[in-house]
Image 1 (cartoon, rainbow, N blue to C red):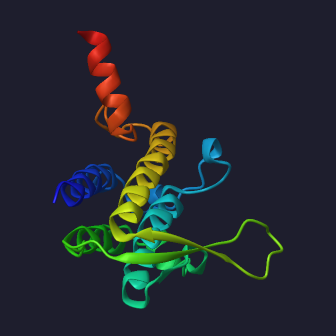
Image 2 (image 1 turned 90 degrees about the vertical axis):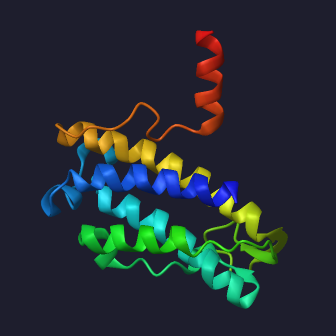
Length: 166
């Protein structure tokens, strides 16, 4: 499935950048990220996919129910292991799901939106790329970390850039 391959490519790219970091750098509060760490952004990416996995079991996806697991933020090896696990577990078949959304910080109830597994994988992929753009800023602040030109850039933007060169 093309979607699974795209997630795998992005996770490999993310993993390569993480391989260049030591644990202190992974958990370093970056000034350019308002004191957030690269590890926090990686955790956010992982937990969105984990919420979707859980939603496939229950039929309801609730991204606000993320665990916010500190181990993912601070243990780079554990985070890389989870990225590999997630890319292997993407389901080959689509499935109808209900997405629970909350539009207010004081809302006590959610609204339900009909969606499907493939749509949510696509959303999480684009969301991961967005966070990788932020991670790239943190990597630049740390210095000495190589990332590909396509790191943190949406596929549609890469295609557009390629057309402009021709």
